Amino acid sequence: MTTIATILKHKGHEVISVSPELTVSDVIHTLSERRIGAVLLQDGPKIGIVSERDIIHAFSAHGAATLQMKAREIMTRNVQTATPETSIRKAMEMMTEGRFRHIPVLDHGKLVGLVSIGDVVKARIMEQESEVDSLKAYVVGAA
Image (tube, rainbow, N blue to C red; front, side):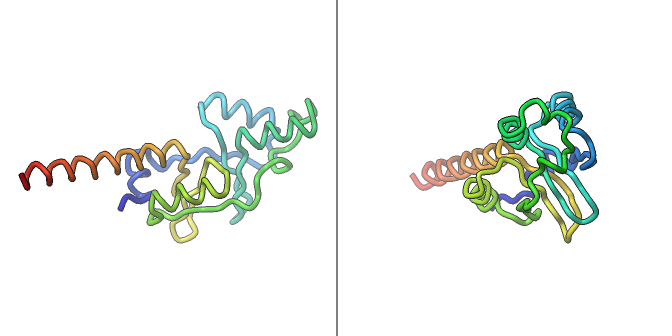
């Protein structure tokens, strides 16, 4: 069973986080510069996230004024998290049911990574390819 730890082993543990006090304009610049879809906001032990979707929803509600709003004003607050031991299947299920694309990874309460739906799908495809290869080897060996 493939876990989030496997993804982090290949992807790395770097997490881009910003201050909740940054303007949305600054967050957009960070997302663009880093070519990422979301950033974490940490305020003590609390974790929030600002994704491209959060920005779009804010623009829909507030128009151009969104650019001067603080990141904390548009962030998603009730962020679901995973652990390194969370299975790829469980992470995919959580993301699909919750309709979100990024999940922070906590190890004993400490932030150790951020995984995207793209990371999860890639790992799941690799897992399935490995299963198919094993089955092919079994069938050839049994013949």
